[in-house]
Length: 93
Image 1: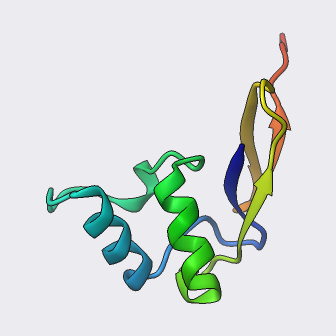
Image 2: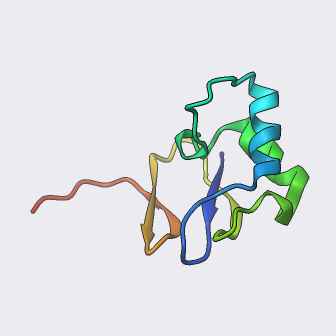
C-alpha cells in the first residue's frame, strides 16, 4: 500500500494545482472541504502526486510516497511536521 507523508519540517500540504486536480477527479464541490481531510493512502491522491511530482507540494512540504507491506496496521507519526509511517502497536501510560 502506498502512503503519502511529508519529509520536511512544516507539515503536510498540497499545492493549489494538486488540490484542484484532486477535487476534479473526486467530484468534490464542497467549499468547506480542506485537503488535510484526505486519507493519505487515497489512490487518487497518490496518482495526483505521482503525476505532478514536486508541483504537488505545498509551500512548507516535501511529499514522499512510501510503500507499506499489505496487512500492516500503520499510522503516520510526526515531529514538527516531519512525518514517518510507523506500525501500530499498543502503548500505556
